[in-house]
Structures are given as structure tokens and as C-alpha cells.
Image (cartoon, rainbow, N blue to C red; front, top):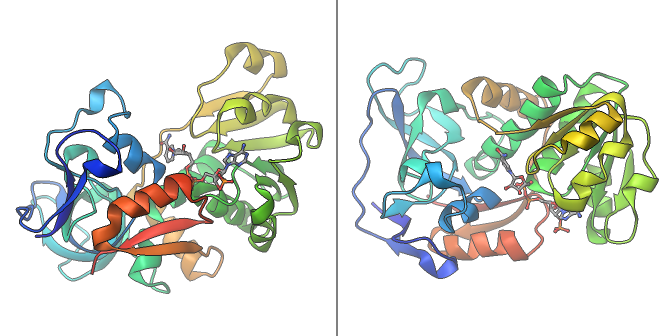
Length: 311
Ligand SMILES: NC(=O)c1ccc[n+]([C@@H]2O[C@H](COP(=O)([O-])OP(=O)(O)OC[C@H]3O[C@@H](n4cnc5c(N)ncnc54)[C@H](OP(=O)(O)O)[C@@H]3O)[C@@H](O)[C@H]2O)c1
């Protein structure tokens, strides 16, 4: 089969399209998906560059890619609830070397669900990691309620653009930060208040918030503590807690490790099919340009998601 592999850690040049990669077979607890589309995430570049940490050493050659949408091709022993030909989406086993930038990929059954019925494969592929990240943070960790106020950083990005819509579906009041060019976009997603992070200081504008969702880190993270009221919750996708600031502001802090579980994916698909969540696809790249797709995500300031068309 055709797949995008790396044989060593590196940048864009390390990625090679290989036409004669052995097709994976399903082992216990896993499902083989014929991939129709795969989305790119900042995590894919971190895997490629060897930045994911000591415990995740890849065996080379390794196929990159996490998010996948496609059709069930083979079912491993012990897997229930899926059938051959079913249209699905989920998180491929990139850290095991069998990522989604391939004609066939392996997915642990617990990280797979029926794809939303109302969207195509390209749109479904854009959802697993960003959808699960936003759902896990807002619905589960924060238990965000109608009428509460949340500040979402990076509202025009993959996770932020989904988080705004989930917060609005809950009935929360939503403030967000985005670049000048993206202010109208985040308003169109439902944001009640927007701040241009290139020219305004959000920490001087927003006070007494119930929750902050940080998808950016750095100074954006450290200035977010003061936006919260005592007892508020800060969930960060990137930054660890500053214990002194947690104590000073009396907040609850969580650094998230996202997981696209079947349950989260099923709930996200329901939101999509109910018309409460739309995914903005910035650009679709052909399969042979997976390296360009990752580079564009890193440097092109896309709005929403970047997807690779595999089939
Ligand atoms: N811990 C986990 O399990 C986990 C899981 C998934 C993702 N992540 C991490 O979460 C982060 C976000 O992921 P993503 O997929 O949403 O990335 P993304 O699609 O690249 O979005 C990031 C967004 O942040 C915006 N931004 C940059 N600097 C900003 C600032 N100072 N203030 C406000 N917005 C700013 C970017 O806008 P511009 O276009 O203006 O640059 C972009 O829209 C990444 O670092 C990713 O690795 C962690």
C-alpha cells in the first residue's frame, strides 16, 4: 500500500511517500481502516521531530498521522460493535508506527466510532483529536454550565474553533482570542466577545470568568490565571500548572492529555449531526503532499483544519 513514512526524526524533508509498504493486519482489540481522509495536527510535527518525549520512541520506518476517517476493512479478535464496510472515524496508532497517512491504518477499537452521517470523510477526518480535546476539557473537566463565562484562547485554531461551538451549544457566554484576520471568523462561530491577540491584552479586558481554555501556552497561559474568579477552572492543552499562581488565585488547574475515545467521538458526531458543530476546513492537500500539509499547518496560519485526501 501507499503510505507517508519517516526513517528518522526530522523536518519536512524526513517525510517520504512510499508505494510498497506492507498493509497492516488487525491484531487483538484493533480495527484496520481503509483511510479516505486524514487530518494534520501540531502533534504530527512533534512526533516527526522526535519531540513527544522519551517514552514514545518510534520504531523506524514509521507512518505518521493521527486523525483518520474511512471504512472498516478488517476487525481484530475481541472487537465488538463494528462491522466490515462501516463508515468510521477515530485516532490511528501513530506512536505505534501505524499512522493515518496511509491507505490502511490501525485503530484501537476504543478510539473509533461511527462517523457523523451528515458530513463527508474529509470533514469527519478533521474532527477526532480537536473534537475530543474540546469535549474532554469543556464538558468533562470543566463541567461548563449554561450562563457561565469561558475564555477560549486560539479561537480560530483547530481546537479553539470547536471549543467555541461546544461552549455555545452548552449555553455559555464565550470570549475568545484570535489574530486580526480571524476576528470575523470566530464571531461567525458564535463567540460573544473577541480580542485581537496581536494588539490587545486580554488580561486587562476579561475578569471574573468561570473557565479558561488555553490552547496557546506561554505568556497567554501565565496571564490567564488573573482572568478567573476564585474557584474557576483553567485547562491548558500545552502548559503545566504554576503552583504559586494556582494558590494565589485559588483556581483549579488541569494540563490535559487528550484521548479520542469512542464515547467522546460518538458525542461529537451527535453534535455534528444535530447541526450544533461545524468544522471549517481551511485546505485539503492531495496524499502526495502530506509534508506540505504539515508545513502549512505550522507556518500558514490556517483557519480551522488542514486535511489530506487519501482516497
Ligand atoms: N495535550 C494534548 O493532549 C494535546 C492534544 C491536542 C493538541 N495539543 C496542543 O494544543 C495546541 C493547539 O492545537 P490546535 O490543533 O488547536 O492548533 P492550531 O490549529 O495550530 O491552532 C492554534 C491557534 O492558536 C492561535 N494563536 C497563536 N498564538 C496565539 C496567541 N498568542 N493568542 C491567541 N491565539 C494564538 C493560532 O493563530 P495564528 O493563525 O494567528 O497563529 C491558531 O489559530 C498545540 O500546541 C497542540 O500540540 C495538545
